[in-house]
Image (cartoon, rainbow, N blue to C red; front, side, top):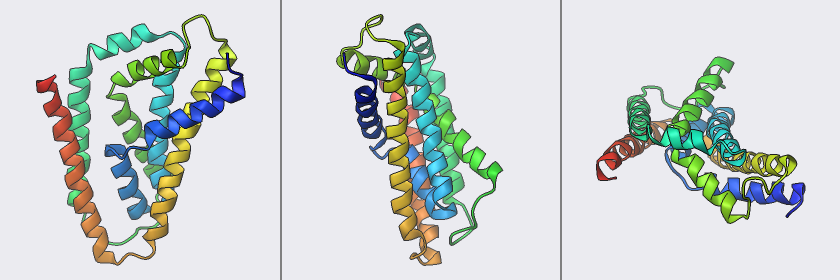
Length: 208
């Protein structure tokens, strides 16, 4: 069995690769970074990373029964998630402000964090994905120590956080070089994409 630090590094790679594909959270991170700055984009990403940490920990420490129970309610959870995405998309599309705004207040950052955290939680399949990944890495219940599992789970969180920091940092480099009119285009494009994600999330229920 691998050592704690080796598992932490492996977990970081896993967390980075899980977070990297650009989905609705990535779109929100980009839009918020351009609109409100790197702190807003990074904190939004941390919300998603925290939800992954929760589901990853539940899978690692044997609470798979909770995940199975959550999966039973995946239809209402996905409906909620889809509605939230549609709401956020419409809000972004009709934003009247143009140009970059000042840094958000702590309350605004908390809202950014909470929205992506709750949005990520609406996909309970995540816990089953983590369970499958852990099994693929050779972790069977009772065969790994507490320290090893903690190292792996924290690595997943840190890897995910590194991706969101990288993404928000790269996007923030563009922030000061864009004309005000471009922010309106960004908001509308992000709004359409988010609404599309929301509709597809709900529509997938009827095809499952």
